[in-house]
Each structure stands twice: as structure tokens, then as C-alpha cells.
Image 1 (spheres, rainbow over the protein chains, first blue to last red):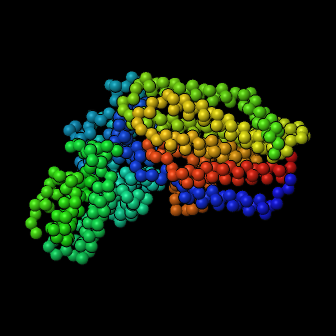
Image 2: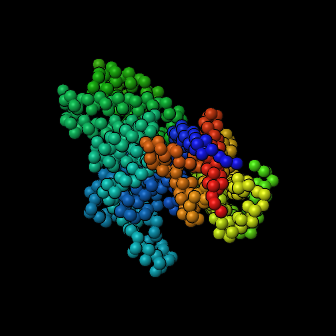
Image 3: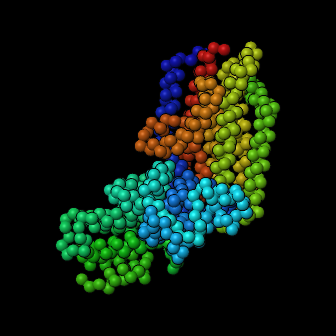
Length: 322
Length: 246
């Protein structure tokens, strides 16, 4: 049977175009949240014996890359995962704690994270003898009892770029990447977070991140505590306020009702989310009080009073007179 | 199409699979997998998240392995026949080239599906499901994978007819396993959506993430995606094979 070349070509082209249209329309991986992206699950998984057996072979490629960033941060020394459940705030604290160490390795025994086991064991725990010695010589290794040495975060940036390219819904990659990028280029950090928002418009933590970036921008523009704010400073703070308000609204929709005193709740809600939730509400109130008036700040405080009844910023706003 | 001819060719492919000990290799993989799950069970699951992790890992490995075996089976069918010159006596019989191609593609697909069915049955049976997972998503995953394997077999057959044996296999593997990441990386470039991507029908992560099933229309579209690509690729392979001078 002869096939008409034009008919065959048309059929093939039509099929390819139809399949291409479906591919652009349906993506089974396009959903928000999920256990693979959940901080709590990640922390539990990483602490399990099975994860230790499998080393860095984890669920997602973005997950593997996040672990890579940790390796880069520690100058190539592989530690048993310890930053998995870290909130951005904690991560920031860790960086700041070690900032003085940049390029100046310090053997301060009292520094934080000293004692975190390394993936390559120290000599007294290594049964491999010569092979173990060779392993420690040819691979980056540091005595686990000594304080961690943190490299400059620039080396981490490509990993955040690649991890968010491989999974545009990996919000954690955007937030941590934006945090490190801000040290190098604040404008680029803002663009990075905005890309994250484009892919995850309803993620409240990304709005909070952008809010903080805009506050930093306002601080670079001038004095943010002045009575009469300069127009550029005010504009930046107004944008930040809008971000925090949007973040707080989105947070109220997703925060579970059963969050305990430690900040943990159902659906993978952890301290990481809780601290950002409080930041969204707290910053919304503070900025509204400064930029609009105390009454508007009180309205916001009332709106979130049911969620954070003991939050001091919120209580202060409620008690404040006009 | 003569179904008797197609099934005779397919039977030949299966006999060849048995002769080449491919099933023994698959059995070895199954054994290794069982050993892995047994050792994980022996070590124990500290928490439900680890169970989910193992379930995800198992299904991901199974899907990857099945696509690899389907691809290598499909991609060697014609080069082997050309090399051993066994195609000539076959075509001297009253069997059409289209039937031969369909038989070889069908057998490669069936081999992949059988392996997938056996391994995923074992995985779902042996790996404890310690968190909540949506049965609807599992159904969609199980329904889409055979189509994805059929698509992979079609890619293997087509590339083996266009390129020499090894480059063909390499390029086909690059397409099967690389088109998904490539489309994600080049998100803003729509042309990458025109690449056949069997991974588009992989719902493993969606299932182990506990996400609800795809909307009915989207599921139908994905089924259509698999059908269309399989039809396009086998049709293209058929045209090439019909016109090839042997």
C-alpha cells in the first residue's frame, strides 16, 4: 500500500502539534506543596537510617542539589545533614555566626555545629585504616570536633539557579537562593524571588522574602526611621508593606489550626513556616503603623488576632492609641 | 494488518528475549530489589517519611528500569535482524513489513509492561505505605505507564531504523530520559514541548506526595498524549521501513 507523502506529512505534523499542545497544557508535576518539598519530611527522611544507607541519593533532584549547596557552604566537607530543617532565619544566623571565619579558618572549639559528624569518619572511628587515611587525604575533610568553616556563598548560587530550573516549584530553593544572592547583587536577588513568585504566586513565604528584600532596598535608599521619609524610601517601604500584607493573607489560608507552641502543625507546617508567618503579620502591622496610621495597623492586628493571640507585636498594636 | 502475522513476530521476539537471557537479567534486578527492600525492612522505618521515601525510590527505579529495558529491547530488533541477515527469509514469507514492525514494537512494549506490572506489584505489596496516598492517583499512574512504555518502544524502533545501532540507542535514550528535564529547563521555549516525553506520564512523585488525582479532562489529555505520540512514532517508523531498500 502506497502512502501519500503529503497526507503522511500532514498527519505526522498534526500529531506532533497536538501532542505539543497537550504537553504545554498538562503537567502532572504542577502542584503546590507535596511531601517531597516539605521541610519536616525532609528532616525526618534525612535523619533516618535508610537515608544514611543511601547517602545523598534522595527523592528529588532539587533535594540532592540542596544538599550539594550545604557541601559547598562547608568548603567541600561532607557533614551528616544538619541544615535540612533550618529556617531561613536560622540559616542566616549560622552564616552570620561564621561570617568572621570567611577565609580565616578558625579552630574555635566552642563554635556552633562543632561535633556534627562528618560523612567520612575521623581516624578513631574509621576501621578502614590506610584506605580511610587516603580517603581523608584526597577528599575534603575536617575534624568534626572543630567548628565548621563556611566558604563565601557565591559558589552556592549556581546550584540554586539549577535547582529552581529543574523544579520551578521548589520554593525553598528560591528563598535560600534569594537570601545568598542578596549579598552579591540585591537587584538580582529580587528578580530571582520574582521568578519564584511567577511560578508560585500563592506561596506566602516568597511574598515575605520579597518584602524583606524591599526593606533592604529602602535602607539602601536612605533612613527608614526618619519622620519624613524620602520618596524613594517610602516607595520601597510601601511595596514591602504590600508584600507582607499579601503574604499574611495567603498565610492565613494555609496555616493549619493545630499549630503547637513549638510552631509545628499538621500538613508539614513547621518552625520554618511559622517564623515566616509571624514575620508577615508583624511586618504588616509595623509598616502600616509607620506608613499609614495606628488605626489601620489595629485593623490588621484584629484580623490576625485569632491566629497569633500571644504575638507581642500584635498585642501592642491593639493596645496602641491613635 | 494481519493479527496472526503480528502475533507470530511478537512470539519470535519473546523467544529471542528468553534465549538472550533477558528475563534472567530482569529476574536478577527483581532479586536485588527484593534484597534492598528486605534490608530496609530489617533496618526499620524510623518514621512514615522514610516509608514514603522508599516507596518513591522504588517506583522511580522501577519506572526507569522498565523504560530502559523496553528501549534496549526495541532498539536492537531491526539492527540485529539486519546484521544477522535474518530479515530476508522473514520477508520472503507472506508477511508485510508493517506487520513485522508492529509485531516487534508490540512485543517490546509487552515485555516492558509485564516487567512493570511484576515490579510495581511487588513494590506496592512489600513497601509499607505509612502515610496517606490517593488511590485515584495510583490508578492514573498505573494506567499511564503502559502508554509511556509503548511510546518508549516506538522511539526505540524509529531511532534504530534511522541511525546506526549504538548512536540510535544513545539518542533514543537521551530523548526518553532527557526530554523531560530539557523541557523543564527551557521552560520559556515552547518548541521543547514538541519533543516526545514519556516522563510526562509519570505520576510517581504525585502519588508519593499524597496529591489528589489529575482532573478527568487532564487525565484524558495525557492518555491522548501517549496515544498520539505512539501512533506518530510507529507511523513514521513504518513509512521509513516501507521505503527502506533491503
